[in-house]
Length: 290
Image (tube, rainbow, N blue to C red; front, top):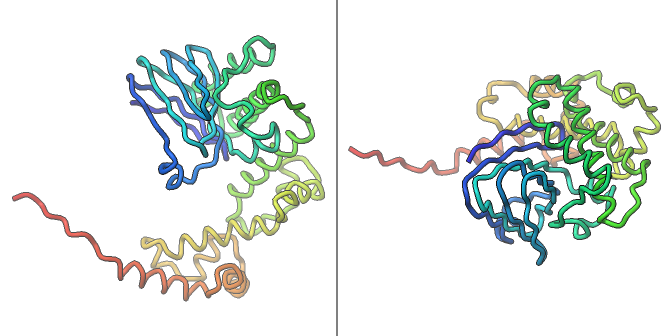
């Protein structure tokens, strides 16, 4: 099996090629994976069958369907096949077109102008994404998701409100912008608002639906990155102050207070605790053949 992949923010694009085979994602797999996405599939070559929620769909070249990664699914490559799989956060889909049960494992119609446009756009997208700049790729990604939403709105029997889709898209872009720049100590809500060409007030409204604020989201990204770096062995030589600075904190005292409020211990205590836990973990013996 071969794979081409490109990730743009929260959207993952994959082209999967393989020989005849069967994949099953069971309840046990779901429990361990913890993935919550809607996966849109466009068959590029060959033939494949998908089963979910008691429904089956067969896809040939050009056909499009989707499934919910949070529920059991079976995928069968009936011949040598390749498929474009686009992984979209489920929350984004729920906000735009409602419960996934309305449209999963149903072939999406190509009998509408939007459906035909989506199919041709997605078919030509993978080679283009690998050649254009990051900003251009991001714009193409948003176009793809917009076309998918518009196509899904019909079988889902919902009216796609432009304002809802716009808010969901802008919210996604705002989070992506923060993830890309949270290490900059000068990053603030007005910087993100200017980048998205929206007001700070509207930016705050985007985050209000998630019960947070742009400022708190920035601090949360900085804290979580700091926590991970404090327990990373190859960064053990960095001081607490260094960890704070490289994650956007300009004052050690502020970092310490924020960290303790979030995790219940100081950064130094957390690092020491994780180092002791790692040292207490037995290392498996490797028996090499003579």
